[in-house]
Each structure stands twice: as structure tokens, then as C-alpha cells.
Image (cartoon, rainbow, N blue to C red; front, top):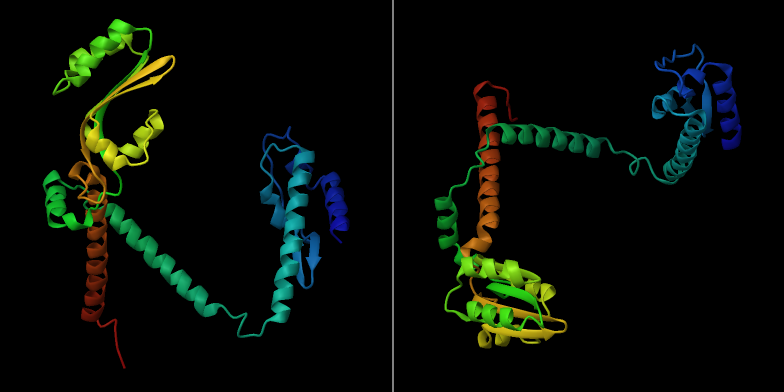
Length: 292
């Protein structure tokens, strides 16, 4: 049946009716609906018509590619219809009646898109630093630190650079990092360098960047603030300037984005609740609601 439909469609293409759709040399394609609809496939009492597939073929598509597109569509349509009709024949009327579910789904979509449009137009998404800090202070118990975090600087150098390594070691071992000196010296002598003193970084992420081997991260951080690692032909100089152990309270700087999202989501919930109540009140005042 499918092969017969393919052959029939191919003949239609050659007849001149569909050739305007399939020839890539045509700059402007126009297809007139035939008086008698051409059938491409049938499964039971369901028919696939020529008009159902015309829009599938983009303008300028070659005849070969067009036939491939249509052939695949017909094949998929037939396979799907066979399964659908088999399911219909095996299920009771109650099991194949979806009017209520479809109505509920339609209503949900309508409400969702209406609320989404109003949220985009009217919801205030500006969250101030004061609001974020206030929320953090009032809900610290909700911000448990899930991983060890650090502030650090490191420098990767060639192991034969004896004097530069010695000078960089002095810079990193100082009580506080002289950022200008670190950057200047590292730019001339380091293979790679990095520092982050203002923002927290997860220690597990640092371990993926550097050859840090430890089975007890907490013990490692508590007992090492400067580490020098030989990994020929390189030397890694690493200085931890601060750290926090997991299971404590997560710092505010790590939670800013999360808190902002929480505040905005709370506003969305409040906005939708108020919207629903306002619509209900308006309907009551205009006598659109009657409860019997």
C-alpha cells in the first residue's frame, strides 16, 4: 500500500501539478488546490491527502529531496495511524474519551499564557542589595555550605626557574597578597597564574585545576595555607588566603544569585494570587458568578 502511494505521488509530480513545488529553479511557487483531492495513503477509514504534505517541502528543494521528505512523512503517518487505530479498537469508549482532559489542558494553557504575559509586563524583577542581605540574615539556617570553599592564588612555573620561583614564593607567603607585584612578576616568569581574593571558589573545582592530592579535604585546608608541588617539568606554588569548611553557613557572596531568584519567585507567587483574587472580586461585583 505504501509503495503504491509512493508511485502514485511520483506520477502526480511528473504530471505538472506538483512539479512547480519540487523544481528548485522556480523562484515563486504556487500550488492550486485540485478539484478532486489526491489520496496518498489510507489506513482503515483515515486518509492522507496531497494537501497534507505540500507544506512539508521547503521552497527550492530538489525533486529528489522533496520525494524523500514526502516518503518519510507518509511512512511515519501510516505507522502512527496503524498503532492509533489498534489502540482504539482495543480500548473501551470510556478509555478513549479525552474531552475532559483536553478541556482541562486547554484551560491550563490559557491561564498559564495569560499569567506569563502579565508577569512579563508588570512584575518588578529588581532586587536590591539590601533586600538580598536582609533575606540572607533572616534565613541563614537555609544556607548550608555543601562543599569546602577557598580564596587563593597560585602560580605555575618551570622548575628550572630557580630565582623566579624563590621570589614568587616570597610574594605568596606574605601575610597579604601584593596583587600588583604578583601580577607583574607572574606575567614575566609564570607559565600560568590565577588569584581570587574577593569571591569564594569550591575546593573540589580547584582540585580539578591543580595537582592537589588529598583524601581529607578538611584536614588539608586546616593544616596547609601554602603548598609547593613538584610536577616535572613544572612547579606549582599555591597559597590559600581563606577557607570555609562545608556544613557551616554558606557565605552571602555565594548565595546572591540564589537569593535573588527566591525573592523574585516569591513575588511571582504573590502576584498570581493577587491577580486571581482581583479577577474573582471583579466577577462577583459584575454578577458574573452565581453559585446555586
